[in-house]
Amino acid sequence: MKIAIMGAGLSGLACAITLEKQGLFSTVFERRNQVGDRFINGEIMLAILSRPIRDDLAYLSEKHGIFLKPTGNIKTLHLHSQHNHALITGALGFNNLRGRHDHSFEKQLEGQLTKTEIIFNSDKSYEELLQEYTHVIMATGDAAYAAKVQNYHQDLTVSLKGCIVKGKFDRYTTAAWLDHHIAPKGYGYFIPFSDTEGNLVIAYPDYPENMEQDIEALWQRFYQRICFEFQQDLKIVDGFQIRNYIIGSCKSPRIGNTFFVGNCFGSIMPFLGFGQLTSLLTGIYAAYDLCGLGNYEKLTIPLKRSYEQSIILRKTMEQLSNSQYDFFVKSLNGSFGHRLFHTKRISPLKVASYLLRPFVSEKSGGIETD
Ligand SMILES: Cc1cc2nc3c(=O)[nH]c(=O)nc-3n(C[C@H](O)[C@H](O)[C@H](O)COP(=O)(O)OP(=O)(O)OC[C@H]3O[C@@H](n4cnc5c(N)ncnc54)[C@H](O)[C@@H]3O)c2cc1C
Image (cartoon, rainbow, N blue to C red):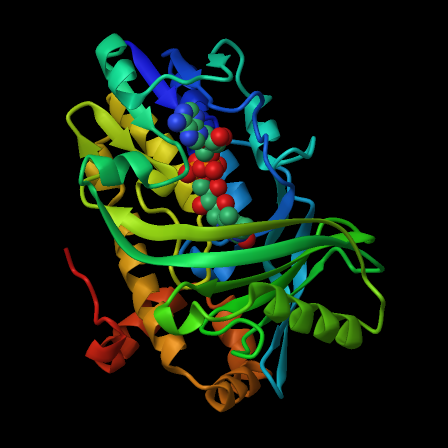
């Protein structure tokens, strides 16, 4: 067996590490000149979204031998709407770094490889890899190839604008905003990297009604609101902007001897853009299949289902007005919110999507089931 992994991101590296543990060696082809060679940003893993898993990082290390260190665990989450605010506390998940930072998840994964070769600055096409290798793991972090081979269903695209800001923060506290004035049909968030640095981001879908929005003006509104709420003049030190970030899922997780992992599989949850855990798991599961330890299509069924549940939540969220967001956020502030975030037995994502399914109108695009 000769295995090529296209892309040295979360899914590709998780796959290579898992193969190594089973005594199989792949070659990783990375387009850029180092692992994580992109802007630095903060991302989070929220425990409520991965139930029944209670602790993503403990699960990855104990069950799959992948060891990742966060920048902090999230002890406090502030959820804001236009006029209301909910405070959720407890063991809620983790903050972590991505990109060029020495402690980014990508760099940590690279450090866990011992013998696998990573070929940087690769311009090998998928077709060339197919010729040279018996198996190809498609881990490029985008839908380009999956779409090219007509194995991808796109649900939406998103615009994002983010900045690294300096100020005084609590690294264990993160915050999110649901307010159409800041991010129409989307959200804004703040993720600290440390007690002095963090990431402020807005993300909203590229629907026709949003195309006239000036992303710069939205971001300025968000930034000014955060400075006011944090009672600080936050200093912007770096920034990034992404247009047309595709959210969708592959139709088939495997075609012949090509495995679609990470965003090529459809890791990103349409609801709030979370995709790290699923990306890692798809990489691990593809490796299990290659090692004869499981069947990739079967192992990924729960991940596919979770994507479908998440699209229902997204479509529902998009139908809410700012005053409905106010009501929703207010109801989370207190024992209901606490119970929801700390429930151990049920998956809130699963239950909410089941209950909301009948209310997702055809006007909002309905639900794709293919
Ligand atoms: C701004 C932003 C914020 C996010 N926040 C969160 C969050 O808070 N929580 C969360 O869970 N998820 C979040 N996500 C989603 C999460 O980052 C992704 O789901 C995850 O990184 C996808 O992993 P991957 O392995 O598919 O791709 P990546 O980790 O992006 O890796 C893809 C790799 O493939 C390489 N590559 C691309 N094309 C080629 C090619 N042709 N040949 C060779 N190599 C190639 C790239 O250079 C890259 O190294 C966020 C995403 C973005 C953009």
